[in-house]
Structures are given as structure tokens and as C-alpha cells.
Length: 183
Image (cartoon, rainbow, N blue to C red; front, side):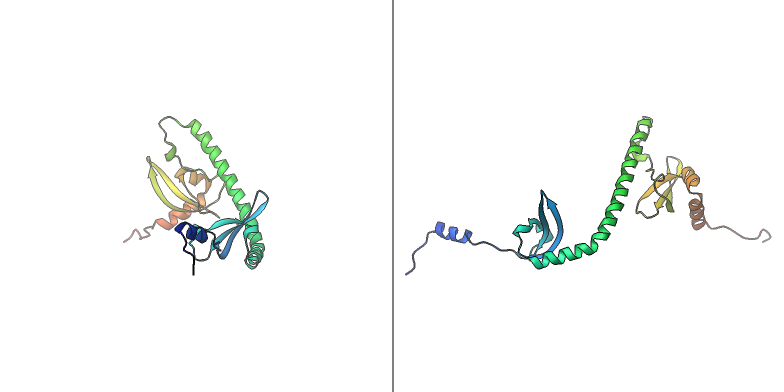
């Protein structure tokens, strides 16, 4: 005959069972305090449940090898992206410095939010997307080459820095009446 168990004894038995989770996919790798860790997607769980786990805790050598092989193939692309990121960060730093120096020169009635972003010193304009009026001054929305960034430039500044882009914008937007004067 079986011995009668108390609820406490049953609970102790239930908690001693170790749950084993299955790794569906390795997403990223990092070295933290000299230990290699992997960011894992767990089978049967959502992306919100992804976790960083030390390599020592993992029992999925096939997935690790596959991830490392794919990582080697994309390593060149990562290096190129990191170079581009450094360039973008440098440009952002320079822009921040310029904005800070411009802010110190602003008059008290000027508003910082109305000052156009001055990326023209760093980037080459690709095209003018549109135009608007800001405080009575004509402004162009300029898209920069090799970037998703856009900035508002005054028409004066745009005409001085990139006259051909301004001419192209006007040629696209305006239609000319070419009727003969005789009619």
C-alpha cells in the first residue's frame, strides 16, 4: 500500500523537477566580464522571453556552430556598418557642438526649435523634397545623399550652397507658359 503524502511533501517533490528549455535560435553573441554569452530565442516562447545565457549553461553545440559560421560570413558587413556608425556618431557630435555654439549666439526672442538643422556642412544635398514658409522666410526641405536625413535650409542658404539642386527643384515644380504672344 502507498503511503499517504501531505500537501507539503507533494509540493517539495514537484519543485525538485528541473525544467529544461529548448533553444530555438541564437540571435546574438557578446563577451561580458570575460564570459561568452548568447542571446537566445526559446522554443515555444515569445521574443519578449529571449534571454542572455552564458555559453557554459548551453547544450546546443550545433546551433552555436551554425551561429558562428553565419557570424563569420556577416563579419565583413558588420565591420562596414561599424565604420558607418562611427562616421554618423562623429557627424552627430559635430552637429551638437555647432548647435551649442549657435545657441549661445541666439537672441532671447529666437526659439531653438525654429532653427533649421545645419547638416549642409557635412552632407551633400540629393534633392529638395518640398518648401515651406517659416516666419516669413522661404525654407527648403533638403534630402541628403547616402542618408535618410532631411533638414530645413533657408532658400538663400540653399541657393548659395547647392544652386543646381534649387534649379532642379524649380524646374520640377513649375510649369512655364510658352504661348506665343501673337495669339
